[in-house]
Amino acid sequence: MKSLLAYRRFLFTTLVLLVCGPVTAACLCTYTPAKLVDVLDGGNIVFEIAGEQKTVRLAGIITPRLKPNSQLQKPWCEAEGAKAIQAKAYTAELLSQASQITLDAQQVDEAGEITAVVYIDNFSLGQELLYKYLAVENNEPTQWCD
Image (cartoon, rainbow, N blue to C red; front, side, top):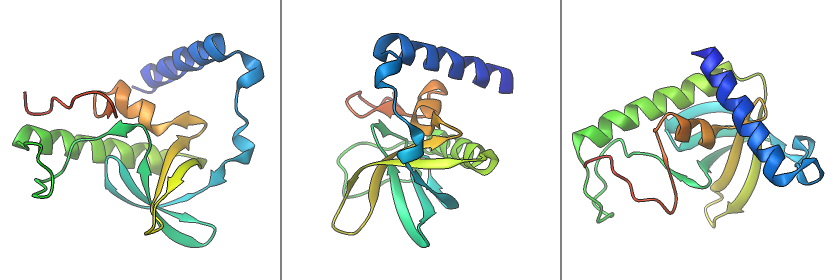
């Protein structure tokens, strides 16, 4: 499992370097360090950031919902719930094993909740969830219940 994850990371890094080139690669030294507090679900995590607990939503992806939400018009099914449990467990596993967690904040809402790209040992948590089919990109339709 770890060798497959390392292989995927290698491929992703190689692709980024080929597309972006080394000149445009970002330096993670400017990102915000964070410490794991709690995993709420596959896409929402509580971190300690600069001494304060903040809820962070993963940027650029949609993860399955643990339970129906009456405010959303999207259908929910038990298959989505099962996939959501997998996404939460995988997120918790990766974050608990990380030696370094950093955030690249994309936006902060009125309630102080942050939408960010979360990096685990310099690899995107969102990308890892996409690789495992535990998330889809924001502009893609969710097909948890099909």
